[in-house]
Image (cartoon, rainbow, N blue to C red; front, top):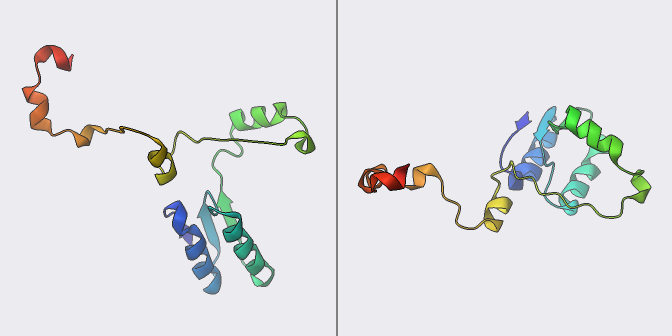
Length: 118
């Protein structure tokens, strides 16, 4: 089963797939909270199928190069990451005045002065 839905549904859909005894390809992130992932991990000992979380950049050359430059795992005490590629709800809530081309009525474009459209 592929779980490629919005992030807030992952835990629920993975629970259903495990109950149906299906192999699962889960798009990242696996869950949104530690509690959700702990609940899923508790189901794993009796689950004899494969659950794979698809982190598409895990083997990308840029990721591997960055990983090689990091200190030893024990030396890392804090990490903060913002994924600006996503249009997820969390990112959009933190953005202000997000305007997409389809938000502007095309007839309004024609009314704009010519110099304003260049």
